[in-house]
Every structure is written in C-alpha cells, then in structure tokens.
Image (cartoon, rainbow, N blue to C red; front, side):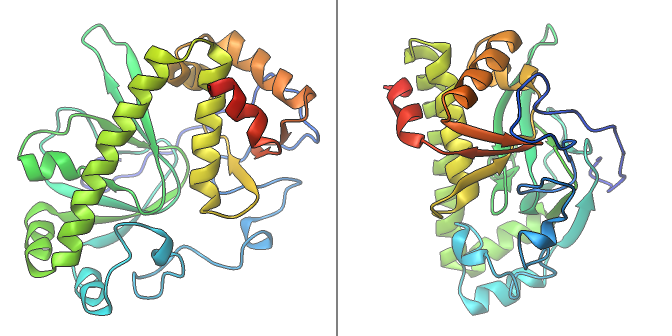
Length: 277
C-alpha cells in the first residue's frame, strides 16, 4: 500500500507450515485473532472493526486511543479510516514522513533492510499502535517499512493535522510520548533478547509470550494468530527456520502450546518463561 491508498493483493503465506497441529485448518491470512475449523471471526467475537473512535469498544485497552471524550471527538474529525489488503505497504523505509498511522484492526509488520538486502523484522504492530510517529515528530524520512500481514483497518492522519491535534490536547501528547517510550523499550528488549539469551528455545519462547500477552489484552487465555512464516520468526529470534519448526513441534508435544490452523494458544506460559531465564 502506497501512501496514496492503492491496494495490492498478494497470496497468503502459511504461517505454521511444517508444524504438527492438533487439528488441521488452512491458515487464514485475513483475520486478526484466532480462526479455526473454517469459522468466521464473528463466531469468536461479537465486535466488528470500529467505524470511529468514539464507538470503538476496545479503545480503553489501547494506550494511545484511551482519550477523553472531547479529544476523541476531535480525533474522529481528522484523518481518514482506510482498509489495506494483506501484503500492502503503508510506507517504506526512506519515504518522506507525511502521515501518522494508527492501527485499528489487524497486524502490520515493521521491518528494516540493510544495504546488502538483508531484512530484519523489528515489531508486529497491532490495534492501538501508532506508526510513523518518531519520523513525523523528528521531521526525518521513515526509518522502517510497514507492511500489512493481513487485511487491516488503519487511521491515516496527515502530519500537520496530527501535530496540531497534539497541541490541542495534553492527554494526546502524553500518550504520544508513551508510544515513543514503548518503541524504545521494544527495541531495548529485542536487543537484550538477542544478545543475552543463551538458547534459541529461550528467544523463541520470549517471542511467543510477548505476542500472546499482547493479543490477550490481560485475558486468562493466551491465544493469537501466528501471522509470520517460520523464516520470518527465525529472523526475529536470531536462529534458523529449521530450528523454529523443530522447537514449535517440541513445545506442542510437551503440551506447552496448542496449534489449530494458524491459531496458537499458550497453555503453559510458566514453562516457556523458564526457558527465557
């Protein structure tokens, strides 16, 4: 997806290829949370992607979007809600930062590419995450690329509109600062995981726990869609694709996780935590 809004459809990747599953279901690339046995998301959740911020039933769970009523009305009046197809690029590394993007629904892959063409996945952005914020506020080109992992709904706000909005609402400015702090902490913890974790199993366990807890929003069940391929997971965990497949199968045989299609549930988070120590 370019910043002019053009959509590009690409074939879906099978995120859990090579993993023994409890029940086979073709991986679905088009939904944000878990899906299995061919059921639609509506059968798991009663909500739909929000049409506006005031009516979003999940905004209180999302750091930036949890604003006062006055600020939310103002926030609704700026920007535009856009739907993006799987594989669409919202912006690319080196592009002029003209917009800020807030994920309302879906998952977005944030990555950076070296001069020799090697790509590193830095983060999987989800609902409530603000993308392009650091580049806009620093007035520099985007330092990363943002690509939709599945069909997404994203609020796109022009740079000056967003800056003016922050100036009108102190709570929004505070939340923007918290979002920037969150980006720093994400990079810090990723560097710590790669540099200090002694095993590939520990690094993979930490990734799964982080993704699961983010998707669960504090709920007891830790369940999420594994939207990345094993190659991409290996990239984030600092290991090989074969090792990722072997470890996921081992975690399943040990009954620490269950896998149904593209949906993963962490059954024994304490066991995975022990690997990260």
